Amino acid sequence: MIVLRSLSRRLPFSSSTARLAKAYSASSAARLTTASGSAEHPSISSRPIRASVNTPASIAFRTFSSSLKENYENVLVESRLPENSDIVGGGVGIVTLHRPKALNALSDALFEDLIHALRAFEDDDAIGCIVITGSGKAFAAGADISEMSKLEFATVYKMNMFAQWADITKISKPIIGAINGFALGGGCELAMTCDILLAGSKAQFGQPEINLGVIPGAGGTMRLIRAIGKSKAMEMILTGNRITAQEAMDAGLVSKVIDSEILVDEAIKMGLGIAEKGGIAVRMCKEAVNAAEEMTLGEGLKFERRLFHSLFSTKDQKEGMTAFLEKRKPNFTNE
Ligand code: CAA
Image (cartoon, rainbow, N blue to C red; front, side, top):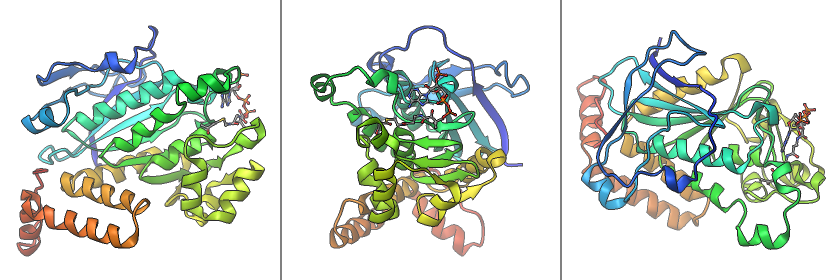
């Protein structure tokens, strides 16, 4: 059993969603957040979590840090810690999209909650990896059509609609997408911003925007072609047809198909495995692999090499290589 303790905050939130900016605290002091076991999971033990600790370096780099809210309206958040409490930063933060009546349609409010929770996990030194998943029969059925339907060009242009979705790509910790049910339109696009995609056996992927008289607007035409190639991407985008989990796997969109019942557990298990590795190297892996999508081969190889060189300034490199030679498990400290 890898998971020892869990913090769950699965309480629906009744008050209005605060704007993201208000959610930041200007305080640079370390803060403690305590949560109790939820009504749905009364047996889950509660624990105080260190939601945010600003080191001098992070204060210099970023003026704000966020911590998880007690409750969110549209997402559920949970932390899982490794059994071995000596593992530094070995926890997994789980964000479950939770707007079941609208099949997790990605309203502005949901997206704000999602970004807020992701940033909180990003700032939490106890967390080394993040899982995003859906609930019920959908990961997410796309951007919220009822919110969009009446908007005019001038409005969507001036608000630069969907630009804020790119904030997900600023998260430096790895994100595993555990995709259950429908991942359509913006849902498929959100999935593609994750770093590793695991599909539940009942998952379906599609870009049906063409049926609404529009095109994918949050990365579908750009990321899908990189993931599955032009012909398959073009077919999905032009026909609006959905593909199954197995087809997504065969096309290279997802890395595994897993029984829906155990999908999230498997994603968490994978996340715990990643989180126990050296945190700086993990983030650099993500940075380098994502850079590969945007760089020429020559630039990318040089970038990768420089990142590799820089890791020789970390304690984790010394520890990792020493531990190998001493035939023991490394104790990474993320330094
Ligand atoms: N926006 C708003 N509400 C949505 C929604 C969406 N994207 N998708 C589903 N819902 C709502 C439905 O309106 C319905 O609400 P009511 O019960 O109040 O009527 C509820 O969720 C359940 O949906 P259905 O009754 O349609 O469920 P179903 O099982 O019959 O069908 C489905 C499921 C195939 C996913 C279907 O709901 C569907 O086609 N949804 C829309 C998918 C879509 O077109 N997504 C693209 C959106 S545009 C976009 O995402 C742009 C972008 O690039 C970011």
